[in-house]
Image (tube, rainbow over all chains, first blue to last red; front, top):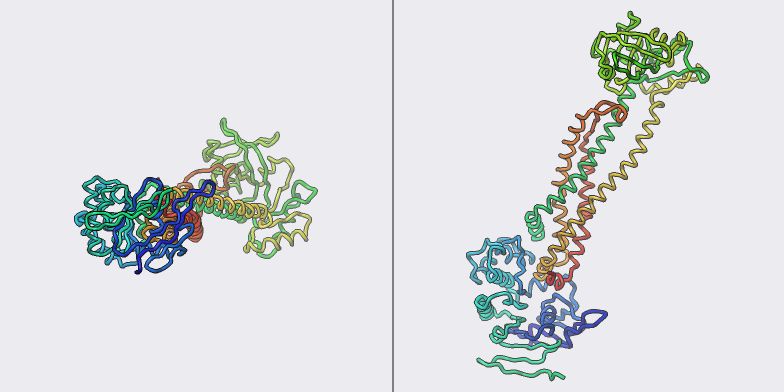
Length: 241
Length: 384
């Protein structure tokens, strides 16, 4: 079975004086089209793991395979290219470029990829309509609410149809109504486009809506739950000592 | 090119930063162009002044004498030199002029009007009266325009000249404006009158020679030095010291200009560093979207380069306006050689200076841009 993402014995250590082991020999496989959530207490290494998968950071040791290719030691230029083509990011804060309006913000990854301006614009408009903001194309971030901005950020993550969407607390700053909206949106996209979703979240409500929940403690996956119908079946992967 | 779109938007969104960078470059360009113009203007004024108001060859007394006694003989010898247009024996000295309650130090030149006019074209610079009147009136004088102003002396009035224990009274029959600092001290007298004032008999202090070809002056001076024991000097030799000084001054000026550029460069680099540190998060996001290091660097280099040409042009404009203003200021003789400062603006100079400014702009922007491209995306995004 070929996985879209394979992680082997991934290890990340920070600091040269006092060492902090953020990820402790993590093994993980993810199939295409999965909707996966990663939960755990603060400092458990969730964001670090996400940064590894998202090629924003490099591991201290271990391997990362993306679509059957070992990209652990890829060059900065190659990583940038992969981030542009294969990955879409949604952060806790929308991080939209403040001097550009909604359409221009969504166009940005496409322009970076070298897509023609006209083509990029029409794709961006389509994505904004998908997230329900077709009437807010010319608004700059300071003219939109938090929830609307986050939806623009989702549209931007979708631009170029990346195979993997990564969200680090994507609804962390939103109220429950907006959160639900975003979540429904992500689910819908997953059904339609078969994109893989990997979400880090504190919100167990949201986690329980995904198909697979990984629990991280002290840099290790300690438990995994998979959806079977309405329920989750857990598998203890690691006996805490 | 998305880098250009981002750079443009950054600039448009930050008018204050833009103004600061633009002014910094414009001032550097403007100041340097004006300074170069002033230096050139001074040089031109100096040379013009030296050439126009000096004899091409001047013969001074013999080494062991204070005056030239046999000036008629000397003049005859001088007239035999090739290309000679005029020979004028002159008695030049210092005295005090008094009119009503005003007293000023003057430089008097006693000469035969016809010869002196051939030598230095005196009548061309007259603003009142006729220099030739000095041929027939012994106690007549032509006074420099600034000197007349300082003495509050009116045309046609008498004033006194005193030297040591000799005082004479003369009438101002003319006013002259040579355009040089000499106007502040000059009094032209008939030769005999000046000799009376000096009290050393029928002598002169120098003989001035005008040639049809100014470049022949050194040869003529050398020839006279060979033929007589008098000391002849061409204007080229006399002004050499000043010209040499001007040349060595140029080196200091160049160093000064370089310093101005360096300081301006630091200012620009500082501004760019500030701009970039405010955008750290944005850089991280762009990297997350897949912008590579080269693109990030491109964005910020573009930002510093786009502002270059308009700044340089503004600097040129500032230089132009300043030059015009400076030309209206009257300067005293102690500071400058003419009564107004000349600023020579040359397009070639401006292009060179502007080019240099753009280069400094580029270099100053490169290091901050490079650092920006080397940011770690995770840290950048996490910046507060």
